[in-house]
Image 1 (cartoon, rainbow, N blue to C red):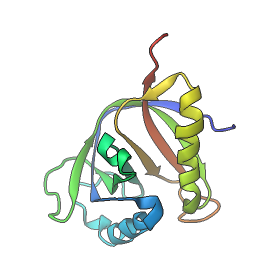
Image 2 (image 1 turned 60 degrees about the horizontal axis):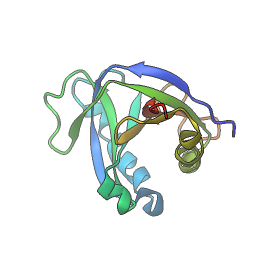
Image 3 (image 1 turned 135 degrees about the horizontal axis):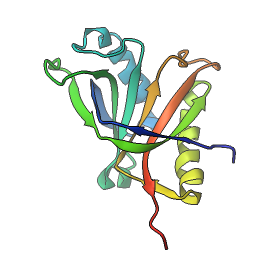
Length: 162
């Protein structure tokens, strides 16, 4: 498998956006969350960078047992003050991240996630460090096109020595 990450230490940061709960790969709800959020994301107060956004997946044991999770379409902000009433704010904790790049259309991103969790993670020297991961949509994101690139950040720590 050719999927290899780079590693990046990130300080904690703040996000504001729309969050929803569901079986997203089956229902196609993630694009609907983004469709709703894109219409109002410019109205988020205290936004840091108008050309970047995040998609955050939050996993709990209960969610995984039900094959559902929380997803948040969000932008980075400088403070969690003045959050619009229809949105939520989150503090993403400081972590070491394994960063993978998904290249191509967004309908293939689930394959990249499966490769990360089912192929890379079990054979790596790392384990997840938290019950979340996130997509970073930056300057290489070209919309839902074959030329697009999205970075996937997985918080990790080294596995304990056996």
